[in-house]
Image 1 (cartoon, rainbow over the protein chains, first blue to last red):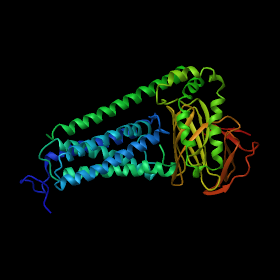
Image 2 (cartoon, rainbow over the protein chains, first blue to last red; image 1 turned 60 degrees about the vertical axis):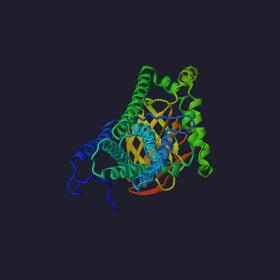
Image 3 (tube, each protein chain N blue to C red; image 1 turned 180 degrees about the vertical axis):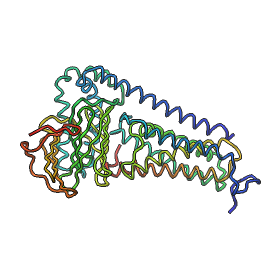
Image 4 (cartoon, each protein chain N blue to C red; image 1 turned 30 degrees about the vertical axis):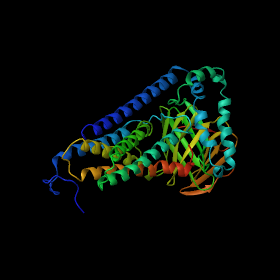
Length: 185
Length: 255
């Protein structure tokens, strides 16, 4: 098991101060989303697209698509880390990730603006927390990608956290909707 | 080569989020001002033609397995108030045509007093939401084992109410229908409820030890349960002589 392509000077125990900025900003985003969701008075405004039975189903299907793309993220990330050299692989990874997160944005806006951060049942609490973590981890990941010399663990950890949070979001929202209200559009 | 892409991605996401937020803000603001400028009834009927065709298919398009006897009552209950919108009925077609291009209905304000009855999706339980001057009384009842009362508030077209323990009810008014989520005894359901006119509504009978609630839907079906302390007991028949009509907040009208 070889370690990731870490620069020679990186010694695991000493934290890299440069990792601090993305981490702090990511945590800030997660907390800010949660605080906004708690303080903002839910309005109940609902997006809807023709062809769907309700805003809930629009959101459920958007999250489902994002979760499917997240699985492709996991697979392509693993291929990249295990040394796959297909020229299209990095592009696939980037674009599937971009599309996945873009798909979640309408859901985020609706959840925060219309419903807010809530904890009236375990499912809702887990969903609310996972939503904040998802965007916090994503911001950390994007920021750390844009800098060189980040510690080797940062990318897999934030990527894994982003993926895990999205799957938790899907389990606690779309799967719940499909399970309780039926699988349709 | 790695330096720009992620930042551009982040910015694109922030921009998309902001645009959607701005759309929401402008929509809810126009909806709010319309409801304030126009008489409540007119604003209601203007918004009504947009939303019900969207909201109701979720009830109609349920898998057949979920269709219980009450299912037949639900579309009827939803259709009736729309047909009975007497004051605004004549004015409705014009706003309808004007509002039709907008794909989503904005948030609607609650009337000063309103009652809604309906069922949870899948018809597990009946639900009644009553609103008066921003205060909410609501009741969920499956007629068998689950019942819960909720007290809370309504503003900007959304209701938020709490019951015993973790029981909670939230909902939003779209057009003339309230849809949302309700939880009781650790379970939660989505529901939709349509405007109810007397004798449909929410009724309560209270003695020293026992509280009984009944929901009468627009078709006349009654679902009720009582409780003494934490023990749920069957409700007797709804007797208009002893039961009081619950009209939002803690206000009850009756005898």
